[in-house]
Image (cartoon, rainbow, N blue to C red):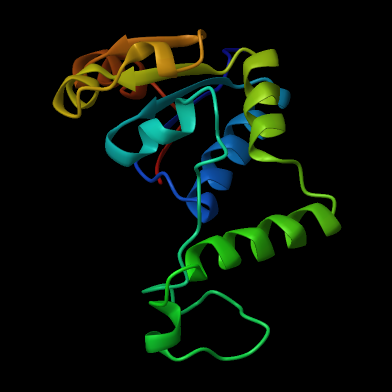
Length: 156
């Protein structure tokens, strides 16, 4: 039987959008899939050595469950992003959900391949020294070579 393959394109760098690619990739890898995640544009934030800057914004996120309804004007106030991030991290921890660092490490331990979009790295003039060592760099054609022969391909 051939090994199943899954490709994920991670384009977002916020806390709420960081969990899906790491959870899906680590789960698929644990189930025996060969997995590759292509990080592009703001998704490159998830490859930084330090993930403490990954935040969540209540602004323009109407589906975000808040303890009390907040008008948009309140969501724009200074400090609301940090407060929302702290609340979300506390909720994740209280429910026993792994941290981003733990999920990313699980991916690496199960041989999930992380590919950083070279064009985006160049575009935003990222310093590769800020990224974890286990990152490979490639363009869209590198990703397409893998994604073209997958059982599952997701855009997140």
